[in-house]
Length: 396
Image (cartoon, rainbow, N blue to C red):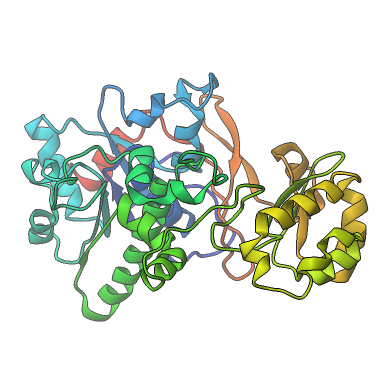
């Protein structure tokens, strides 16, 4: 069927990508579902975003700063680049019927409504499977479909709060410290994308679709699988964060970040004896040959290292430590990262554009296929921008 989209509407790819030809209907909003569909788009899928005619996706007005581009937030642009927008009023019977028709032609459907809402709309997996047995349907919730938390808001900070992850950040003397990123949303979206890909492989073998389910909480529990496994097999003793330069609740000194004369230096797993010699720290002598003390006395050891590292610049210490194969790195802020050769060679940034002169600089896919990183040249859509073309193409 001939498509009627403007040139570049689906973006530009330099190679045939794994999901070319697949149609994804994204009925989700905010971050988790749209992050999932963004990754599928980077793999070559066509993503049609279902939005309310008035206001659209609520993340259009979810501002991380006072910057607005083309009437929408930067976060909306970042997570919805290259997608198409179909305006559908779910309370309008005609619009709902059109959406059901479109669902019969979709390869993948993504939704992150609260439990119960999608069933009331008659757009749940069982209903969609009845009209499209090959559909791969992904549901993302806050805490699953059962239990006392099922109906609670599935929001990132709240999910972090319930997951235990906040007690792994910061120093021992600090209260719970949340991650400064929407890790629950991103991890749940990534998990859903992985499940969708596995279900598409199964469909290629059996011809049948699947229902992929995950939640913000499940993704955060999986994120902690290493430390939770230690906790579960260590008498359920809570980890104790270091009270000084803490970077990991379960790892011994010198693991942490240390201030230098002109910045900060991260030092990972390193034998104390070797570090004492390289940094010329005589005060570490009592701990040199006692690995148990590297955890038991990690605060004392870190204090000694911190005092020494603070006397010189980052480059001074890197010139000593890196040739000795010590795991260390200068802590970079974004401006220094973006101007570094190590970052430039990755070619991870792009400028996406739209016909109304909207242009935004953003990131690219973290993956390469056959040596080529996918590139999407089109910016996020306006609300309902592709409604007419999609309706004509699919006969809605």
